[in-house]
Length: 208
Image (cartoon, rainbow, N blue to C red; front, top):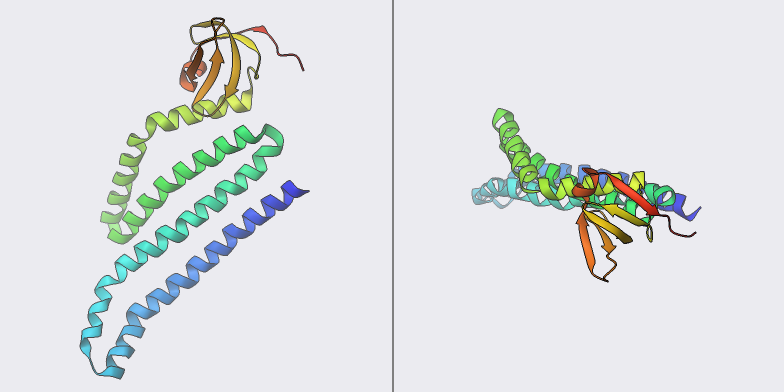
């Protein structure tokens, strides 16, 4: 029941932040259009009209802060949904992946929206491409680790042959690496992409 409450709370935060974002953006738009003009007329000083030039910076700050809150709320919601079925490690992996993708989409979307029109689409796409290229190795590792956590080909304390390591004991399974221990006591961090790309031999299952 507590896990259901967590999902409900996370979903509630997503909706709340979305509503707050719409309200704040509407207020900001009014302030930098009608509000500034009313202020200039009331005080009989046209210098206030120059404040309109700074509206884009306020939009960027508001969208980034509230957008990040929404991304975190969505990530928390998926964590609460995944944890009961797949465990905390998988839930945390999904949450981290959503945060990374959400941040990239947020930056690209804001850049595209600020530029506007065809130029905005091109700029947003370009920034998204740059962010994706810069994080492709990390994302590839994270996605591979997520598949391992979901498929569960092996479990902690299983003795396996994997990624060129023979008869090693699985000590931990995370998004980026699987930690194994050799017979000589050395600890090896095996990248998730190497595990996905090669065969796995289960020599001994861990005792339940």
